[in-house]
Length: 526
Image (cartoon, rainbow, N blue to C red):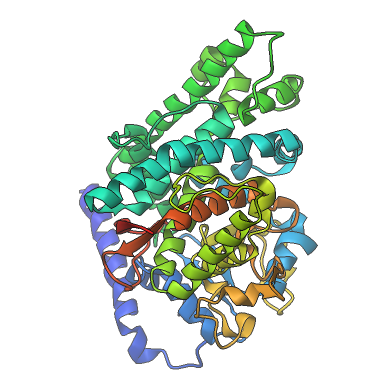
């Protein structure tokens, strides 16, 4: 009897909520200042209705707001402020940085996936990781290793696959190719191993599927109309949470195998030549810091079997994979799609590459496919750099980045912020604001980043694609090395024809903005 009464109460509440939502257009009549927030349910109806187009929805609302900022509320009292205002972004990421950490909600939602890796922590643990990683990322030796590794991967994996496809006329999913490249490359640079995913046979990778599932489902927790629903599914081990648990098990095994393998190699080769990969560098740098931090929320059995430091390193491995595999591959997928409808830009990039090659004392034959570029040559590719930034302005790899207000505050535009509010700056929306980028904000124009032929970086809080302030992306230079190397080498020898024409593809609502359904292309030799 008690059970029947419980379900009756739930039914009455649901009917009442949906009735309010249904009648909203009839009874709500006031000047527009954002989505209607109802008692108890907040904006749940709008969230549910726009669940497959969050980025467009956010952008449409921000365009109507005087300062490109608006408030949301969801069931359970979850309050959000969505931001596409450079002054507000600078306030969050720099001026009042200490008041806007990742926050408990963010770290909780991603803990199963990222643990206590650098992207999912605040405070002293973040500072320690940041300081250690920052030193290693800024070494010339790592930069040289990155350039060499990327060029090897291009010459021995990417270009042969494209050459084969151009001869057979077989369609390729370019997004899949780029993800395979990025995975092989980040594993080589960060972990000193070669998973060999980008082979002519295109081997099926259970890990890659598991990583995609873990990323997408973890992101789905943020965008749920009912924020606590994922906890229910997790407790019952059903639906997406069951898939997430299975995916994370595969991801964690891969990451722990990487750490264990490197640990064994280190113990065997003690006193031998140092390895150049990032993991080996970090293991050496962290060896003296074992007692300086604790890894919470891990099972005792895992601590005992693997060791606290190895659990920590495993979580750093997963973070590096997320940063190195998904962001660059997503960026380049959208970039090559944009180029397919902007042939003028593609030809300008090709011309710049030829000019770089012409400066060499010995110019390679025109029909030579495998062209490598030095770090200095990549730096000289100013137009290509501008084109990549312009593509990321419109199609940022990380479309939304959340923070939490630890104290009450007021943003520069006058928006009041209550303690516990979640603030989200929207890279996707910022790139589409006319009052930020001008009346041509929706046009793809690399020239907006150039002055007298030289790249001129813009205000980082106007273009926070690589974050900004104290948490600015450490891998920014590495990402540009990889992306410019790929684009220059590919455009020098090939062009792509997008099979679905110029219609803008849909995106996957995830931590990174991957293209839904991939990017089918046919490859042509120049």
